[in-house]
Image (cartoon, rainbow, N blue to C red; front, top):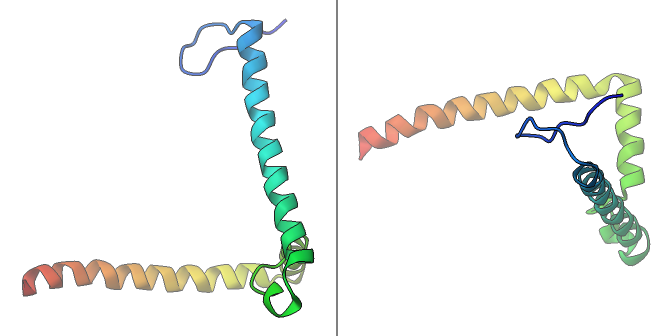
Length: 103
């Protein structure tokens, strides 16, 4: 028989607090499901085809993600994006002392 420990206190949780923690996790998952459902409905039925490309459906996003993983392109795109971000961060980091010196 295992005991559930309340986070942060180290004390054994009562049955009601364990139930409350499970309820909070389920509520968060329910909210995520509702947001995904609304996103799917809006992008599929509300938007016209010319603006639907601005907000693709979550199913289309998941399908494209899976295709990129299977083709092996995802890692190369990730590498290229990270390289651009690192270069931009380094330029911004060097620009701050230069701006201070100019001031």
